[in-house]
Length: 48
Image 1 (cartoon, one colour):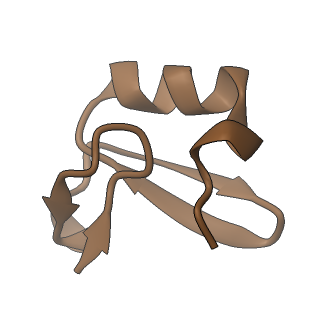
Image 2 (cartoon, one colour):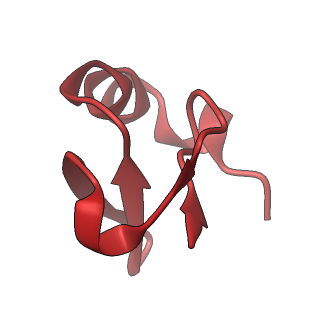
């Protein structure tokens, strides 16, 4: 399980609508809208 970094939804990686790689890590998204938001300002959404 992963968490969408934009909306916080828990996701099964196999069922994620979209993915993006940032800083060598793959992030999973519930929608294309969340992915687009992440890609505009990725550092804002990363909570490491």
